[in-house]
View (cartoon, rainbow, N blue to C red):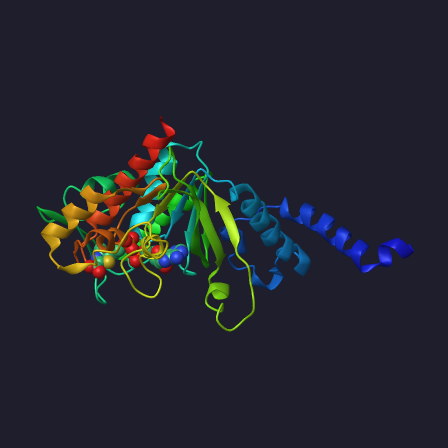
Length: 311
Ligand code: AHZ
């Protein structure tokens, strides 16, 4: 008929047919020695586009109102997400990561070396996540930092209550007036986001307005200062909510790791800060390539957020 000859009708027919093809499951073993007969299940290009865009826009829609936004998917942000999402599967958690690749600085142990060191008692976190290590007494060693990051990342991504928006950056905070007559104060009530490639071009393109996510709790783990790092605390300074940053101090592994975990806290109502972003607020030392404080700062940041939901 004329109707089935139109491109749209043909596309509908193709997607109907594909549904039938997908029901037949083969094993990899079935393919051995059978390559002449090999072919992929047929597909129409629009199906690929729709499979991605439908899910992405449904996720954007659902997470426009989130319970928690985690800014930055480095070792601290991913550890935070793991603990929070496991403890409270009912919370809707959005992770916003500026880079295409989540993981921050935790794909290598330090410099260009692959092993990752964690001082005890952070080995407890590795056991909980299921990352193997060698015990060296006061510290443990994961044979490749990428094993830590990929294992943690895969567990976080499998959780149904977590959505990672990568290649997306937080470019501002949503704020509300402070409570109970605190005229100077503010409460953080969510984040302003944009695709990172768009954020990078605000200077040479005309207005490309951002998106928003409302959430009662934002956990910022954007790392120490750098091109993108320490984003949320730098914004608190520019909006005159904190006077100035302490500035990250020199390297002292012993002082730095204890301080980062102990100081992980709600800096202004609605904004919890963890990981190396904190060193910029407090003027804490850096620790270099030892990652226990990042994992346990994440555990504490999650716990701080849980207090709010358990009120
Ligand atoms: O891309 C950043 C990285 O993946 C991301 N990020 C930064 N600004 C962002 C923004 N919006 C969205 N505006 C943003 N994402 O945040 C992530 C930070 O990860 P990281 O590994 O840099 O920080 P961390 O605190 O999780 O781990 C720090 C690891 C370090 S640094 C250090 C030292 O310098 O001595 N030692 C350790 C263990």
